[in-house]
Structures are given as C-alpha cells and as structure tokens.
Length: 147
Image (cartoon, rainbow, N blue to C red):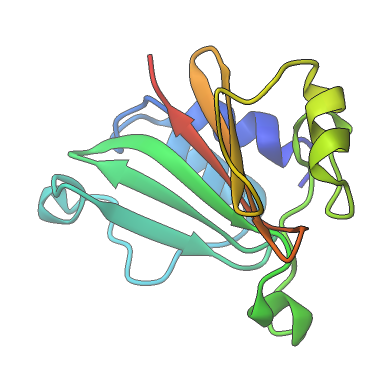
C-alpha cells in the first residue's frame, strides 16, 4: 500500500468504532487474525494488538479501545527467514540500511532518549518514533501516539 506510514498515523488516537478502520482494512486487503471489530470486550482491554502480515509485518495496538501504538518489523528473524515481508515506508525517507546517524540526519533532530546500541527515541509532535537496533542494524520501529 502506498503511504502506509501516513495511513497508520491517521489511525492513531481513533476509537476502534471509527469508520476509518474498516476502510483501512479494505484498502490493505487483510483482516487481522482473531479480530471481531464489533466486540467491545476485545478492544476495551489495556492492550489489544492486531497483527498484519501482507503489507509488511506490523501490529496496531489499542489501549482501552483507542489505537495508540504501532510496532513494525524491519529486520527481525521472521523477515530474515523470508516468513514475512518487512515493513516499508518509514518516515523521512528512512530505509532499513540507515545507520543511527543517518536516521538522525533525515529526521533533522536529536533523539530525546537513547541507549547506546539499543534504541533512539524522537518526539515529533504528537508522536514518539522509536528506532530499535540489534548489532547496529535497524531491527524494528515503533510509533506511539502521545497527544
């Protein structure tokens, strides 16, 4: 799907009952496993993840019925084995092979939190973008909605 990143940003902060979700599901052509959109018990928990595979491996997480967090796989063992496709379409033209310094340059800001060799987190209002590394390679990417 073109512009998957921006489409995912549009979902964050919305309740699971918002019509944006069925449209998103139709557009990507994939219904997440074990998902009944009309089940308030499923969505009104502290943490409900919906996992997608076809458009790149990512999970959309709901907290008490509101989409708040996305975790996207970039270079995990499942991707290296060819089991699933990597998430593509990272912000600011970032690609899986970018180093930490290249990511910082592309985002044009410094991380507000960083652990050497593990992760860099950037606040780009109203989101926190976290780039997680394994052996200096981008491993997975997270977006969290923080209004």
